[in-house]
Length: 257
Image (cartoon, rainbow, N blue to C red; front, top):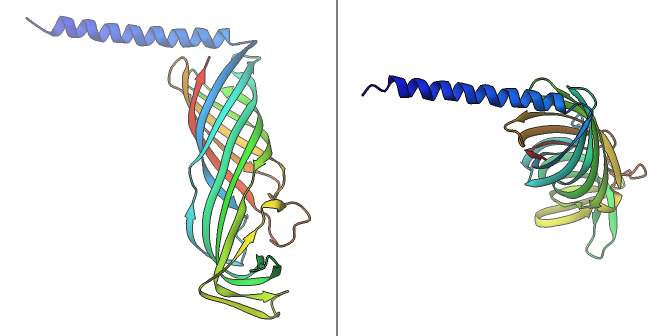
């Protein structure tokens, strides 16, 4: 028996089903106007905390570990036109990293064996870990390019829930009080810790730009790049002489109700 007829039927059925699915999506897009769509998103944050540009005091990045950072978000989008909308929501997220760098004349405040703090310029190795948790409120303008692709641009405000910016220095020396101060050497396995957690800002804000691809009626894949505009440290914190900002790419899946 010839397989031409069954094969033709299968191809025609597949084309009909695809056409019907696309027509359904178009109809849904038209219905969206003047409506509110709810969504849940979950993803991972990839990035780190960095000064821009990299200061001369940091001579070499020896190791960088972005860690595994999760996020979960509930949002609502109001579509006031077929292709334009406004989205806002609440996001719980982690932003963390570990770095190891070689520095020279790096402003530092270390903690001594008896809890005393000694400030000065450090030359040598610096190991840093940042583990922060935030509750974030994003507000974005959204644009549906077609039935599959969409883009967004907006801002966000984050409130710091849990904080840790700490580490240790090793294999180098500290000039107490400045570049010409008394020299304190740390060699071999001798290290000194530091902790700037209490100097972090509670409230931060920034910009984010993103895109999403509609895989099905309820499921989409998204990515958001967010950049913090203010320094993570409080304005009266002078130990680190340059600003640091989190730069993270959030990638994940969304479920549309």
